[in-house]
View (cartoon, rainbow, N blue to C red):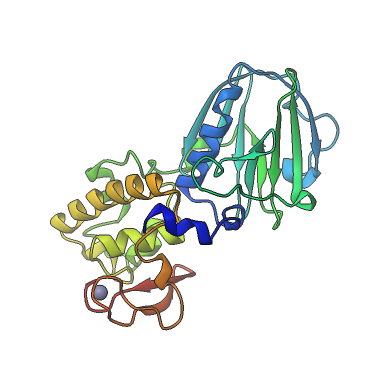
Length: 273
Ligand SMILES: [Zn+2]
């Protein structure tokens, strides 16, 4: 898909389910805050895990931004702040979305859905926009619960993450979505990667050959780089065909639509084996 195609979809980005690429865009948006001190946090107590009273983030100075999978991390001198975007969360810095720079039209935030507002001592302001109220901020999140980040996973790690050679009945796509095994891939990226690797997302992951794991590994890297350049997880070749009656963009066959790992899955029944 070319960038010009994005003009027809100008304001949907704030509703896109954040996957690794979107969270990386949030990280880059917030990275200029390194060195800033959080002076005041206000908003929905649910966002901070029900904590009441003064937010523990107040008074902390941001020393670095990091990301593991879909978890955005702000390091400070005393704590690590974990920003979980949930299903519909996105972050704004001084009213600007991470996607304004990537896409033609500015993403439009609905002020009713601003759940959290963090002011910096220098006057800058971060806001969390989240219609579904599933985004969370956590203090010192357990980073060990996440698998290797999909952008950096090694072939041997992918081999282990898929349980190749085991007796597990788990489908390939369900393995790719399992954040404990490999962090960062969501529904759109997992389908696109399987499509680009010519692999059936419903196949038992344990049955992949060494050659297929290598192909999958290469396509994870290629797909993430390509979609990162194009503007996000919804910029894949399969995206426009993700509708009832959608056909394969390569061979024109009616796509198979089913639920795998609890998520709606599209694949080509001819090319993905
Ligand atoms: Zn096809």
